[in-house]
Image (cartoon, rainbow over all chains, first blue to last red):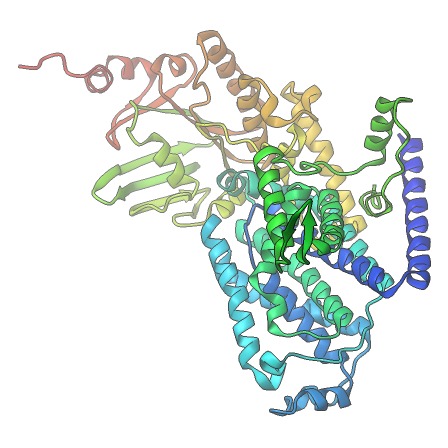
Length: 366
Length: 256
């Protein structure tokens, strides 16, 4: 038992070191475009695993991710932008005085982005989590839209629909993947604890959980607030990656995409969410050509913007109809699991090295 | 000292009176059965005691404290545990984890301590697991600890649900039709099992049963209700010969 634990810990550490080395190499050698995609992978990983905590583990169907990401993005953007940039941005109406002359470092800004999102989650979750199922989905969807509309109209805080430009591009692979690994680590620890068992109990049967003394509301809020904290951080990373944000970045379609990713990855599987988030982000880029005109034989297909989303929807439908459990179906990556798979495949197939992402994070605490 | 006291409890759903002025007292260490035909309000009474429903009128006191209108988790914390008529196990958790959920309400460490794995939490978690395994082993469920709860055979699921309720360390255990769906031998075994836990866990048991003969042998006191009202109460022999009970179960013979 002890031997095994040691082996797995060593493997995890090795995987983490390899992954860190890979990130270092990538950050210094890969081009801007590839780096952008890799950063987005990390950000969408955070979105997907946090959604999984709320829905996959706690059973609360929330569509509020876009709203919390918006809160985090604006918080981080306003805190990191230089004083001069703020002046340049807010030319229609002046920025609120308390924000005008501050310029924070990236780390405290990200932390603040998470805190702001968590506070909003606490305020929204109070009434919303008293609702169940579809009603909760409606309420949180509404919240996301309300946040967006509020951001359009609070010009002195957010510069309205003009958005914010010239946000410093602080987000690097170290920041984005560091945050993603930290998120996965924290979530994994939480769901494996007694609180995690209580969350899953609430998901499986609220009446029984409550009869056993599990405080339903407290546990739902707990999942909601913890998730939203990391969603806020991810929003901050996004703002400091793309350097320009406006309320339209955080349309409700973002929440749908996150749901789609989490479903494809498998509900209740952080590994699945991570892999699905990366696949989704990469495929979205790979499929970019289908939005421009192309030929199938002699047939000329005109370029249709948004064609990728059609494919994405079709893929989601396919998963729901034929592969309902998603890629990982509630299971997690473990070294033991990997070894047994490798053993089973035996000599017939090439030995497949573990994906550094999944390898690094899922096993950290075991 | 009486452990549970229901005082003229009424529950109405719109125009329907499910429970009408139900009063009873349970003494510590007692084993009491609540029987009655289908739809007579037995489960509603359990739901009132455990806080799933709030009584329309009347008072419920447990261990000297008024619990009327309290939330189910608060009531569970005070020491009332229950099982359900249709088994409600957590299907995403294994057998041991199901039991551990029952321990969760006594956890002192907060979510942050649990996530960080602080020593205080680790100690509690280890103790929890030890106690959980002990409980499972004492009920002969030990070797099933890591099975998916809902993959167990029916009878074992019933037992596990009782084990899970016992994990909350209750003073009063409410069993809602524990023998439902069992044949005579199985329900006989189950009743022995209930007598066994009554002895070992220093409990008071209040159980609902649909079939009279199941409880006749083991329960010293039986309460019979029909249409939400108590129609008889007493020792099995008295109940058996009570004309109102016979009427409730078999109907009135004379249609003239």
